[in-house]
Amino acid sequence: MAGIRDIAERAGVSISTVSNVLHNKNSASEKTREKILNIAAELGYEIPASKGSANRTIICNLSDFDTLYYLDILHGISDFVNSKGYSLLICTGENILQYAEPDVICGIIANDVKSTDDILRKISGKGIPLIVLDREIEDSGIKSIIVNNYNAERQLIEGLVEAGYERFAFLGGLNTPDNRERYAAFRDVLKEHSLPFARGDLYEGDWREKSGAQAARIMMLSEEMPQILICANDMMALGAIRMFEKNGIRVPDDIAVAGFDDIVISRYTELTTVTVPDYERGFLAAQALIDILEGKGDYETVRIGARVKWRKSTKIFRKK
Image 1 (spheres, rainbow, N blue to C red):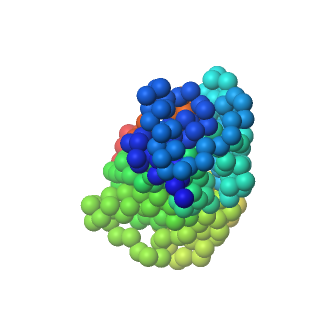
Image 2: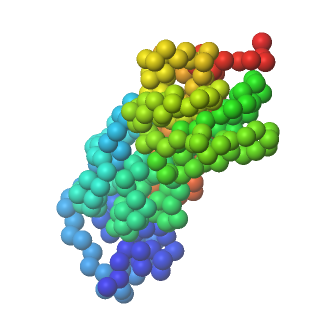
């Protein structure tokens, strides 16, 4: 049986445009609307019965941990969504599948590692527009708004190398595009400067503070600690710092630590990190989604720049 994707391909429009027309949402021209309805009839697609006014509920799908990371993103999303008269719901993980129906919601903003590409494509196939904040997915109904992790991490590591650090350790998060890009930049800079990096100086975490503390505990068993620990996010960096300090190891005098994200607490703990404009990213994601819903948007990927925020958790050796 023909589906929304088949109609979209025949009509030469996006899946969300077809969904909006079939659900009686006024977001397409009369010519496009007539073309879609004719193709649907030709393919024998059963058009859903109208349920009155168009749905105006958006879901934000987040991971169920490290809620501090999401505060600024949610603030930006909420401000724009509310200003346009839409409602906002929040869910985590695969719970998204319970709500991902065109008669329940009109769009999704996703930033959840547990929502696999296959899950998101399945939702997109129903004609529900998606904005994804943590990866790129090849799908005509999914738009990505992502951080340029590689460039930002390069700036951080190059600054530290220039400052005199020579022996690095890296604490990664889960196997996500964000983590892979940050680690790739880290390794590239060290290689370009002919700095050694031993397999034993690579630690695995899960983005949570507890895994940062565990990595620090293991690191302290080494006969020779690295000069600096680079963490793939701030929560793990903060966990490592607390474990070091609990055991009398001074940051940055005995070991320096840097993170990524610049969550709120990092600003009060003097953590050197990469600051991402998360409020603006959330605001932009909501704006992009509503533009698509109202027939004015596109599905082109947007990359957002980030910059290093130097603070006291790193010690500058050669800069005044």
